[in-house]
Structures are given as structure tokens and as C-alpha cells.
Length: 584
Image (cartoon, rainbow, N blue to C red; front, top):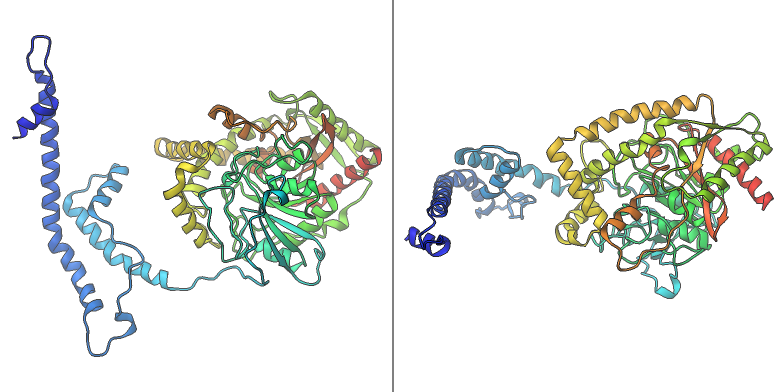
């Protein structure tokens, strides 16, 4: 019978009409292998019946017997974690290249069955969450006529304290930041429908300071793009030329500040995503020192690259917002050191810069995708600061050009691990884990993964490939080399107070059309970070400020400062801003 089946399905004739014996032999071997596997599985199941009954019967008897006095703990409750099937364990063992006998797998399964009770306990306990202190309603998705730039994802109305530094200010929150009771999708079908039950720490701080949150802003698909067309709700448009990009990934926050729809906004920055859209929208944005502002509860990309910071109309408002959101979060965010100072940044703002030394970083100019007018405008802007007392020099930091390679090694593998496989939380640190976000992302990845952007799909595949083939070697080495990059910048800061270069070396491009190719999606989504990403790797604070317009589009200058010396960085930016406005 077996040979009849083989001949019916696999027989081929050679040119002489004879049976191809080589192919027949291979087919026999294949069937024999399958028969051996089936026999092994039958034996496994036969052996497992007794073993499984021995492990389950006492539990079943305890839970389902009906004594005269039934306690609450004896009433059936669905398990929090299913006991894995043997076939599932076989697949997992194969993934790890592990040889396990049938008897070993059954015993492992019995161990897991008994261990699952611990997860029932964990599942039954309430967990501490960041507080929700101010009333709010869910809000609504705005209609196109009240969302002309497509910069709003959701509108809401949450009033904070009656008094405080932000009293009377309207605030927009990037949609990777949880606001309790307000839908959050982070620009992606993966998270669509999720409503967080907690406020991120910075949201509470804004409300405590009197801020009035009026909505969530559109973001790129899971924040992984420097352009503004991967948001699944549609492209975010540049306020100055609506057929051009607003930049990403904090696209909506920057566009709404530029359009005047809101007073202040919050963005997120892993490779430049606060600074990039702000430079193309002509507004101010600050990526603070790594750890100065708590990232608690916010959807991450990679733990060592994550930053969040203000996007505002002017430098004073950025300094004011920083005073409100900066500070230690009692151990909830592992990115933060335990001891650091938060200053009154607005008090440090001055219009004169005596004794300040500014370094124009040569490597930030003349890049492959640099535009001549952008380089010229930024260099001239830096030189203008000599008129208010600053000493300005052109300097070279060769290590600056290494930043993007290090960023790629860290972000691709680390992002795949934390944002995707780690479902937005990762593991192995002490602090707050947004468990409901983890659940929502897990479901989304299992059901909507094919609806992710091409950039995200490539990052997941490449990150997992690097892990499987090279075991995390390049991630580890890049993190180690980043320490040398940090030292190189710190050495420069012994002689200079602020470093200067273009935020993005070219102006905002037109938004792509429907016929864009996948290679072009990668190019336009990831070609903006040559100057911004190195300072995510090192954690130095960096600010973007508008230097003027060319062809009707804004051109931004990036200033970089010493770690935890935002006071000096903001002072220099404020002095330049006042000088610029006088010249205009």
C-alpha cells in the first residue's frame, strides 16, 4: 500500500520509459522517516497519558470535587497560563537546536504544569499603576475639516490644576504617550483600539502644573520613520507647504505648534524624532539629556535610545516645559540615575553670551545628501552669535561620523527585541512595566503584523536575523563603542560649551505618491538622522531652532550641549533666537 501511494504520487519515467529509481528511493526514505516520527509520537502520547494523569488528577480532584463546605479557593477558575502541548515544546526545542527525548519533554511539561500555578497567583493580584488624578472624557477622532494637516490623532479635553507654571497653556501629547481613557494607536494598526488606563508620569506632571491637554498628535507607524507618510491614518502635512513632509516621527506635534493650533507639545526621540519634524516645521524642540525626563509608561523603541521632550514656539516655552517634566521618578524609569539636579531653566536665559564658546562641527556639513543653502544658512547663523559675545570656531570631531553605524547596530536589533518581540516593555530591569500596553501589542503583532509599514517589517526581520545568526554580538559591541563616542564628545566639551550643525542637512521633501517603491520608502524614511542619531547614542542634550527659510521651507540649526547642562544649551539658543528676531 505504501509503495502504491509512492508510485502514484512520485513516479516519473526516464526517456526509455523506465521508473526513476533514485527518486523512488528518496520517496521511500521520506515515508520511512515520517513513519518513525509518527511511531515516536504515538509512544509519547501513550507514555504521557499516565504521566499527565498523575500530575493533573490531584489538581482536578481538589478543584472539582464537591465537599459539603466549598471554599472560595476551590471554585473553578480558568488558568492564566495554558500548559503547553508536547508538540509546542517540540517546536520550541527545535528553535533552540535542542535534542529532547519523548520522556524528557513529558517531564518538562509536568514541571511546567505545576509551575503555572504561580502565574495564577500573579494574575489575580492588583498591580500598582501611575495615578490618574484629573477627570476626562474619551474625546473623539476629529473630522478632516478640523484636522487639515492630519496632525491630530484624537481630540480630548483634560484640564489640570487651577494654578501652576503651565496654567492657561494648551498642550498636545504625542500618541505614543499614554493618557488614561483616551485611545492610543501610535500611528499603527498594531495598537489600534487600545485605551490605556494610566497616565504617563510626564502627563501627570503637566496636569499638576496647570496644563490643559486638548489632544493626542499623529505619529509615524510605531514611531519608526523620519518622514511623515507612514502613519496609517494618513500623511501629516507641512504647515508651510502642505504637499511637503512635516518630518517624523513626532510629526503631528511639530505641525500643530507651527500652525498655532496649540501652545506646547510633547514628542519622543530615539534617533531624532523630536528635532527632525521641528526643523522642517520651523519650531523649537529639545531632546533632553538621557534620563533627565522620565520615560515612564511611554511606548519605547530601544531602552538606551529613548528620550522625550518639549516642542514649542520659542526657547522660553521649551525651558518652561522642561522645568515641569524633568526630575527623578522614584525608580520607575530605569533610564534615570538616582541623583541629578533639575534647574530653573527659564532663569538662565540671557541675550548676551560673554565667555561662551561655540564649535561648528565640520563633519555635520557637506554630507552626501546635504543641500548648499542649508549648510550656508546654519553656518551663518552660528557666526552671528559672535555679535552677542560668543566665540565661534570651526572644529572637527571625526567620531561624529561613526554615530549612525552605532545607532543602526543598536536600534535594529535592540528595537526588534524591545519594541516588537518585547511588546513595548522588554525585560530584565526594575521599574514600571505597562502591562496593558504589552497585552495590546502582543495581540496586535499576532493579528495585524502584515499591516505594519515596510520599514517595521524589515527592522523586525533584520533584527531577528542578527540575533539568530550572531547572538547579539554587534549590539553588544556597538554599545561598548558608544562609550568611546561619548568620551570624544565629552572631550570636546572641555573646550566648547555648545556644538552646532544642521539638524537635517536638507529641506523637507515632497510627500511621496502612491507609486513609491519599497527602496524609496527606506531611503526617505531613514535618511534624515545623520546628525541627530549620534546624540541619541551618547545621550547628550540637543535642541533644534529655526534659522530662516529657503524656497519657502524652514531650515533648522541643531545645538548640542553637555550632559545635564540644559541651562547653558537653552541660554545659547535663547540668545540666538532674540538675535535672529532682531535681524528679521
